Length: 440
Image 1 (cartoon, rainbow, N blue to C red):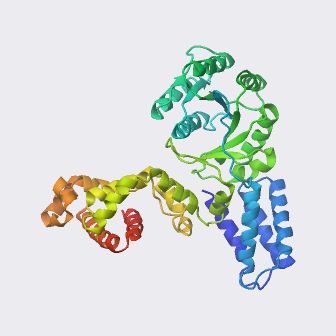
Image 2: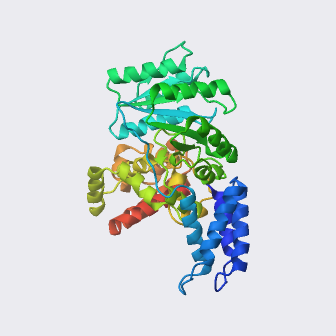
């Protein structure tokens, strides 16, 4: 995410390396590179110029402390301005009302239907009872897609097959929710172009008929400045409450994330990264600024870990480690916990300094696949007591898993090293587990 922008900003800051202090001359050269980096990321010229002007004003007014290098000082100023540009504070969606109605709007192909499913999953986690509503009456597979997503996130879908009246469907869905105990209604609407007057009138009518507590505009982050311009036109017609950025895990240049708040003066409330139904997060401007500048996002990483944290299991594992009884069953259990946290490369990118190192390394969601295949080929006795695995057993495990004997040997050696380290320093086990994953 934002790798190209991150690299270019880093190169820009290097122009201040070796400088003893910030001056108008050396700052001008650095800001020229920063502005160019922003424009290459598809940020509008007006937003990029305003941004660099603000940075310049603050930089020239700073007294650089002896202990702080000019490059570090400018990085801090750019960080703070990025946070301000993207909205300063996180803003969650408004779910007031009985039921609370959330209206989803956006362009065709922006990911509205998938986002609707993810939002239902997020709301269910908070103890609410959502209802998904299929109001895309134009795309043939839209209703079926929403029904499939509804099953995945265990959320019912209200649909009226054959009806072409999106306004009436939405009104009927709200009545249905009231009668059936659903306290949040998520209305998935058809994708539309801002220039399509009839379609724009329809979604305005849906909004008027349902009085949503929250109207969200879904933006495909990969479309950059085009999405920002469209958001402005939608906002003039709908006066939406917030923005959702989708496909942030793609090869995005970042223009939408950096420009949209300044252009429409509406907060980015949520961001979606990945295809899994739990891949939806609150948008934190400060954390995003950290990631853009290569500082990682350790807070989000800890939060994800806490969501999957099983205290009972953790105590059990800790006791087994202390008694040197940690085995492959425990190992697999820990792998499953990490996999639940999300895309592995994205998780590693949250660790300060790791994101840049991992940029050219391809790690997909199946990063643990080879390890799991080898362990699955072991007998229950071998998983319980790894020390019994001799040469002939290693050959059988290699054949059964479809992996080479050298991979099996490496896994056993690394597992043994990890087990010893975990016994002496429990935190070291997580580090070795990550190293193990990267080598396989």
